[in-house]
Length: 250
Image (cartoon, rainbow, N blue to C red; front, top):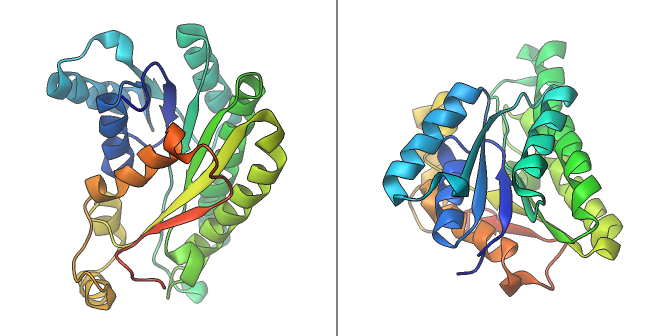
């Protein structure tokens, strides 16, 4: 198994792409921290995973974490260390999106987008690296096709994901001396709850028509890229952004 005995934190893993990553990591022998916006959500998602895989409780750790709160993030990382003693993989997957024109966007919209998608990622990475630098490891950030190509009525979301790409490349250069690899995955159109909540049906159909594979991905179609980047198969890959978008952006 590619991730046997590895400890992986996956933020935003109670549903969608994060949950699909958790499932694939568990199948490959990892111990997985399921992070949700509340502890109740994390426990509920963990229970479903236990039932699906019939695995022992020692392979899963549910944690509620507020990505806008530094203390909450620190407590999450400390809980992982006190439970398993080390962190090998960090998947910064938690995020929010928005479909608003620049004229309809408020200051609060901008602040919230960056609080979660950028500052939450940076804070989590900082706290994990305090421990990971002694052993090496892998950090994988969730970007977006919008972080490469922009998006109409998605200026704040696009800005946050362009920031994620810059963070990925900068941290790859900074943390390589600790044998920490830092990469990102940029999904395209994916059938997640967040997509359904933020993108109109008209826009979704337009994006599908623009995708060479002529279909919308499911979370399981994206998770394989995260497995590759977390595994030794990618042991000389850092600072890259893998596009998993069906050819939409090329």
